[in-house]
Amino acid sequence: MASKDDMRASIKLTTVADLFSTEESRADEQREKVMDIPLSEISDFPGHPFKVRADEAMLEMADSVKQYGVLVPGLVRPKAGGGYEMVAGHRRKKASELAGRETIPCIVREMDDDQATIIMVDSNLQRENISPSEKAFAYKMKLEAMNRQGQRTDLTSRQVVGKLESADVIGRDVGESGRQIQRYIRLTELTTSILEMVDDKQIAFNPAVELSYLAEEEQQALYETMQSEDCTPSLAQAQRMKKLSQDGRLNVDVIFSILTEEKPNQKEKIAIQRERIDRFFPREFTEKQKEDLIVQLLESWYKKRQREQER
Image (tube, rainbow, N blue to C red; front, side):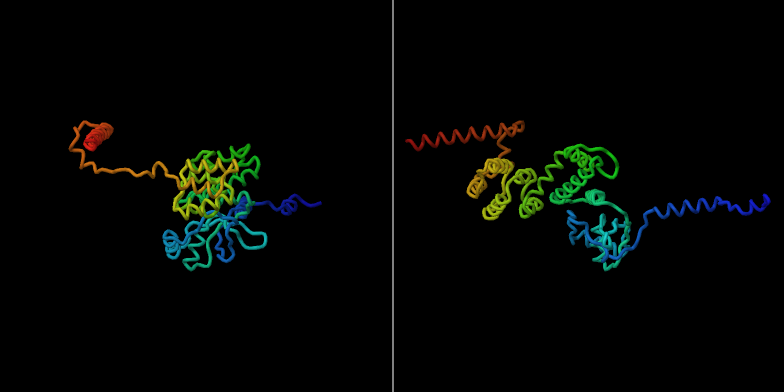
């Protein structure tokens, strides 16, 4: 029979150091790490709605990357067939390419499609100078992802019921109402040519929302008329075209007649420099009093002229 000393010797006790080392290694395995990943192995996010422009800001970013490197890592997820998909960091990736870099520091994270979509949209909405079309497609992608998640509205577990409430959640994150989010999403129904006019501020947001209800062929006819007549619809005109389209009465001729009618703000106005007339009025006269007096004097002059012509 083994002695107590032999039994104690055969038992290997785990030291405190070993326990902590094990916990640390486990945590380290789960901790996300920054890796330098070749640019050639990273593809863009499918349907990425935010334009990556080679503008002045991009050239400045490229100069910074060339000098200091990428200071904030991108976020990628592994692709099933190998390589990675960019989730957040498309501009940093482009700047790295322009700077002549071959790799970019990235955090690698496993995400499903909906999680990746929500993170992609949220990370880009923090940027300044986002065009209406970028917001429109980004909000649409996020809303669809949230609705697919069912009870989940983001990476937490807040519950959502219906599209309007999902839009309200998106709106709270960006300081907009749910209704305004839905109005932005309507812009995705515009043809590319008209949507570009919205981005270029040739067509205002509110008329553009109304025009989004026109059928594709009606929008094409509208675009061609706008180009040939060098004009764009007002909100009232866009609302009329929407109603006519819904009634099945909108065609090329109707579009032409609506666009070429004179708008109230297009009527010619007479502008008189203030310094030319102010000296004729008492200082306490309001603008309305000045206008009334000018009209009265013109009426008197007109009547006098009529009498002279009748003699």
